[in-house]
Length: 80
Image (cartoon, rainbow, N blue to C red; front, side, top):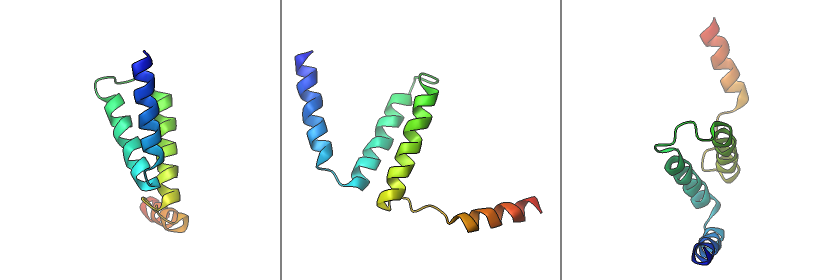
């Protein structure tokens, strides 16, 4: 188990050197890799992780999002 711990510590140090955008990309990869073949393993955890990923992506500009006024306008138009 000690070998796993040192490997994880090295990965954490490597992750700390990544840009915010690269960290967001890595987070998305990790989420997909955990979900593959394990549907429903942690639905709430996956949801929370996705929220954090989206917030991080928005914060660093990787996914700037849509202005609220535009989204609300489109919703009003769709509903008539």
